[in-house]
Image (cartoon, rainbow, N blue to C red; front, side):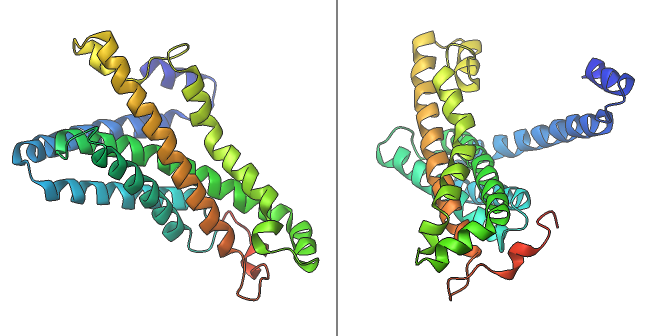
Length: 244
């Protein structure tokens, strides 16, 4: 990190301060969550799982909402989308008895699910917001010809979903060929058999892409509806500067 910061300073990239802030925050946050998890794992309380997952979802919704600024009620939309992906995926894992309902298993899994859902929601909301603003005349023309709201923004919805899902889909395609993901690497470093680590990683990749799809679709559906009035007209907010 020191070398990277020096290069940034030498090249006058302007990232040195942000890199230092990120390093310090990561250290403090990880140490803090380490102590919290030690306490929760020792307590074995099922309600702690709900509390931690709820906090994760709220923070993720706020973060994704910031990326989607310019979308009316962006934080509410992002939180709802992240919640749908997280609840659906974690629920399926529990129903299928893939993991037991214990803090040691559910909290780390929920962290991966919510984190990926947050990124996808932010990308989907941002792309859809920009496309609707740039292509307002085409959308209004489609509405004038009798198209429904969803039909009028069908192209924008497809592009937004592609923008949100492409990174995780590409990562899933190349897993094991280009990179060895974190769950698999961690288990191997801990001494677990390679095939056992692979089995867990397969579950992780499948659950992440499933959660991303559910969250992305929910975000796209909720986002485009924010830009229409009950009279099926584009709301005036679309004319404002979305960077604010």
